[in-house]
Image (tube, rainbow, N blue to C red):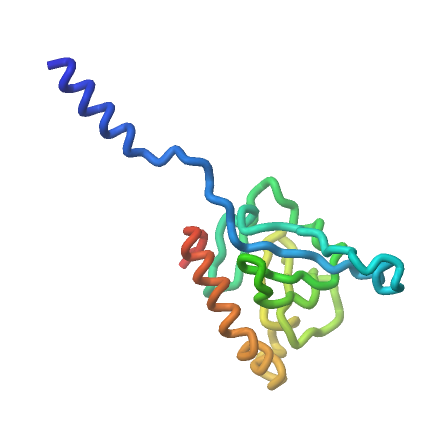
Length: 164
């Protein structure tokens, strides 16, 4: 009897997925705020650094645009970059044109990474959000990246990081 019980318990425990986390296909590189030496022709082989990957994303809320990072990643480190280029399996998806805090007084009619006063991060179609209703360029930019955005969302869904 004990042997049968042991075999049943062993079989069920071996069904558990103890494999390490699968590596994400999402990669984000950064473009510094200041001109690099490559723009001066000094080093044309400079490569934009990877600033985070899909593995650094805990979840993404597609309704609010909130992107929650794992504790190992500090989104405030992104302030060094003017542009963030999102890739899926090496193919460029879209670019976040700037990093925004509530204290910033400029406007952007394209995708931004907004970090609110509580440290929550959002991917917003513009900054400030009121531009969405005023500027047709905001809607045009959103439409231009729609296919790529859907690929991003589908990949997050495949990686079980999409929060509804």
